[in-house]
Length: 175
Image (cartoon, rainbow, N blue to C red):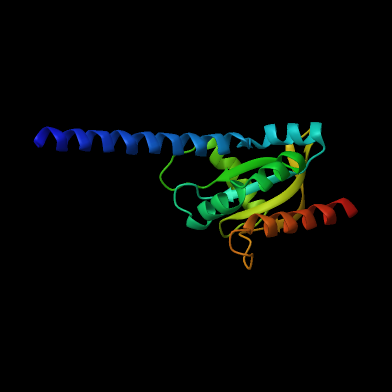
């Protein structure tokens, strides 16, 4: 009886580990569909080449529940992945509490936080950046700001978010 109990326990444990591993791989595959940059210089270079604006996602990756909710209910959805890959260059601007970022990255993120006057998370700014080659500084042109899509149909948050983001892009093209 003891051997059977141990065998069942080991079999269940293997099943749970296998299931966790499969779920983890599915999440990784989903995340692999989006390319998030952390360096404004790199995002600017890609923006210049593609003609796409920068999508600056201000987040607290290791503490912000609403940021996680936005990622889970919007950014992880296939419709958003397709939209983002076609319309913007993704830039993550992280403000973690437990994880230590490099001094250079912390400085960059703080400067952008101040430039856009971000006071809450999550905040998304869609913007264009032009680099002044003489001063090596960026001139930023804000197109519009987004956050978690409040008032969205439950389970369809990405639809409202994309609609709002498209309105920002349309407004930016008129200028």
